[in-house]
Image (cartoon, rainbow, N blue to C red):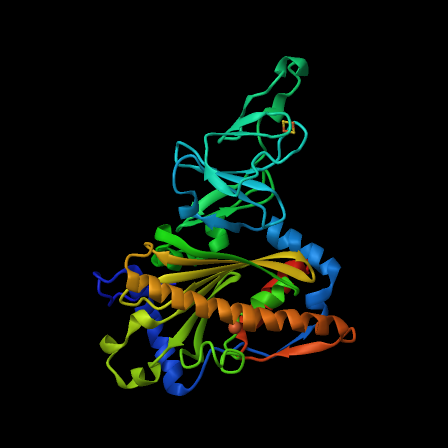
Amino acid sequence: MTRHSDTVDADPPLRLLRRELAAPLVNNVAMGETALAPEVLHEDVSFYRDPARFASELQAFYRDMPLVACLSSQLSEPGAFRTFDDAGVPMLLTRGKDGQVRAFLNICLHRGSRVVREECGNASRFTCRFHGWTYDNSGKAIGIPGEERFNDEIGANKQLVECPAEERHGLVFVRTVPGSEMDLDAHLAGIGQDLAAIGLEEAQIVHNDVLDVDANWKYGLDTFFETYHLNSLHFETFKGLFSPICVFDTFGPHHRYTFAPLGIEDWPGMAPSEWALDTIPLQYFLFPNTILSVGSTSRTGLTVNIHQIFPRSSDHFTSRLSFCAIGGIHSDEHRAEVERSYQTARAALVNEDYSVAAETHSGLVALPPGTTLPVGKQEVGVWNFHRNVTSRLEPAG
Ligand code: FES
Ligand SMILES: [Fe+2]
C-alpha cells in the first residue's frame, strides 16, 4: 500500500492512516454503496462440520502458520514468562536478559511433564515439579538432581525444545512446530504498516475473558466478517453507532475493514479537513484467528479489542478476548468510557454473535449432506476468508 503525500506530518500515524482511508469510505457513503465480493458463494455445510477437514485445518493454520501468542506488553520485562496452551501445543514464552523473546515447548525433557504451570510471572529459572530438573529462561537445564546416575547420557535432553518466536508492532508471534521456519514479513504481506500505526506496544489489557462456544471456529470468525447483520442482530447493542457501509482491503490472507462512523452521512458535503477522522473504526483480521478492533480515538484515548479464536474440535472453539487501552487508563473519565465500550462489545459478542453461532451449529449438523448456504456479495469478509481457507487446504493443481 502507498501513502498519500499530502498528509500533515505532525499527525500521529493512526490519524494519517485514517485520513488515507476516509476518501473511499466517504465515496461509498455518497454513492450509497459498500464493499462487495465479486460473486455469491454457495458454501457447502461440510465446511463447518467435517472432522477430516478439521484435522487438515489444524495442521495448515495452527501448526504451519505464525500465530499471535500474546502482546509484547504481556512479556514486558526481562525475566517475564507466559505459558501459551491455546493453540493445542503446550508452550512457554520467555523474555531473556538480552530482551529477546523465545518460545519453547513447555515439556520437561526428563519424562515429559509440564515445566511451568503458572499462567505468567517473572522468573530466571523454572523447576519441573516431577523430579526437580531446573531450567533457565533460555531453556537450558542448569540443575539436575542425581545427574551422575544418568551416566553423562542426557545430551540434547538438557535443552528445552525451541520454536520460532518473534515480535512485530507490539505482538508476539510464534509457530508451534519446533525447528520450523517463520518468515513474518512474508506472512504479514504488508499489513505491518497498519499494525505499526496502532501503537500496540503501549497496549495495556483492561479486561481479559475466555469464552467457550459450541460451534465451528470458522463460524465464530464469520460473525466478525460482515456488516450485513449489523441492523438486525445488533439492533440494540450497536444501534445508531455504525452503518453497514464499509471499505474492505486485503493483504495476503489478512484483511482490513474500514467502518463508517456515526455522522458520516454529513461528510460528503463537508471539506475533508472537517471530517472527524479519529472516529473511524477499523478492524483487522490476521489470518488464521486474530481480530484487532480499533475503536474511535476519543478525547480520552484509544481502545483496541483483540479477539482470538482457537479450535477445540469441529464443533467447539475457545475465544480469548483482550480489551486494551493504548497507553493504559489515565483518568476516571477514560476508565468510564473504556468500561462502557467493553460492556457493549462483550454483550454483543456473548448474547448476539456467539449465541447465534452456538444455536446455528446444531442446525448445520442436521442439514442433509450437500446442502449449500449462500454468502451474499455484501458479506465480503466471509467470502474472502472462506476463499483463503479453501485455497490453502486444496493441493495446488
Ligand atoms: S519430568 Fe521433569 S524432572 Fe522429571
Ligand atoms: Fe456481530
